[in-house]
Image (cartoon, helix red, strand yellow):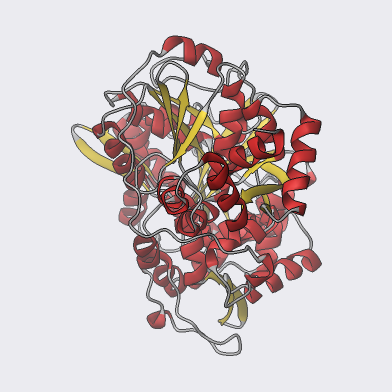
Amino acid sequence: MNLENQLLRAIAVTPLADRLDLVALTGWSRGGVYGGVRMLVDAGLAESVPHSSPVLPPTRRFMPTAEGLRRLADIERVDFDDMLRNCPVSEEYRRLLLARLDAVAVTYRVACALSDVARPLKVVWRRGEPQDADLVLPGETVLQVVRLGRAADRTSTAKRLWRLFETAGGSAVLVLAPDEVRVRHTRRLLARSPGVAFIALESGAAHATADDPVWAMPSAASPIDLRAIVQIIGPAPPPAGETGRERSNAPDKIDVERADHEGPAWLLPAVLKPSEKNAVDIVLDWPWIAPDHLGALLGVGRSRTSQLLKRLCRLGIVERFRIAGGTALAVTDRGIALVGRRDRVSIGALKKRLSVARGSYDENLDWRAVSGRRTRQLLRNVEHTRAVHSFTAMLARQARSRSLEIVQIDPPARASRYFRLKAALRSVQPDAYFAIRLGNQLCPFFLEWERRAVRPATMAARIAPYIRYYSTRGPLDDHGAEPVVMIVFEDRVAQSRFLGVAREEMERAGVRVPLLVSRRSMIGEHGPLGRVWIPADGGMLQHPFTRVR
């Protein structure tokens, strides 16, 4: 079999790999792979789609055409229909992989790193199983890859991992998490699991080699690299194979230009640029966000924000609404389906939380017309929602102007922390969570924007969850550093009254909460990073990075 035919087979067994992936997985020269792929495309035996993501640079990903598959079937003397049913090359499989293209891309990067340790390496894509793919190494060593998306919550993550460890097969599990907080939470879940597992930050694993220590064991402090992981684990029975579909159609020609408002949604991950994907994630995290606040979180100007929104609205992913005299943005059901398929979470559950009513940009939208529980609540309290969005946008602008690294900004749904106290499950549910890095020091913060706590009893109820939380090891376990609780009040009277109540409650419980308090007018004038914060133990106005001792 000549190189061109071998490369055609490699593209068929690793669909949507790019040329660098093919170089690493096959061991062939870069010149041979690049030239061979060009010949296959020119001959109509292969085609490509563009792809880029927030963690990977732009590239083109290749797959065989129907004509290429028929030629491969003739070369290998197999039935064409059998090839469609039993290999990841059918139209149905292609649509599934395109809908999960971000996960496909980072999984290939992990496979490329592993190929430096053991070759030949086989990538087996999974459709309905908990894992995204199985990486099969020589000697029956199988590493199962699980990518956790931004939209995956605690419950869906726990259920997915439980299902994975309930199924037989696999030597170990490689889990990719989107942020540090999710890494810590998932490590605790994995520590209670019966299987062998390793976890890494997705952005780190996407660029790591086999010798880069970016992986962590659930109960070990020191990081580990893929070469050591392969040496630690042993062979195991391979996972049960998925049965082939009764009907599998030959793949149609991909037309990227079809991905307009009426085009196929499964093509959107290929046509969206990283900035557009980031914008969709931010609007989904912060429903009813204003365009200016979105631009601040993206770090772009008004003109660029307008360009992004124009395309996202044309694609039917984001919609504009007129709310209380201002423009607000929300992700449509089409956009929710895009994210749900990408992150492998229930689209129905996402819609129940985040769906919005279709309306007109020229009309005010009433909160009663909104179907999602979370979006309806945020719209009903739109003044509070706008205040939190404004604070977060100011923080992003101010941090950027001071060359500070914003590690993480989380909306209320992801900012919530759950912990056990005296066998009872408790929680803190702030309005936002953010972390900024100063050199080697991580500075995490909770935000509470308070408008209703005006009586001492209500104020005591507001501080009580944090007193319970800081009486446990939860703050350090969740963040690696003790987060500061930052509370903003509407006026000076409520601010002063709360400081007195908070001191009394902390003294009564014998628990110190690192607490900073400010008010709306000061934040608006000097910004969140100005000297606008009063510590709970008294003292002068200070910078928020001054630790409360």
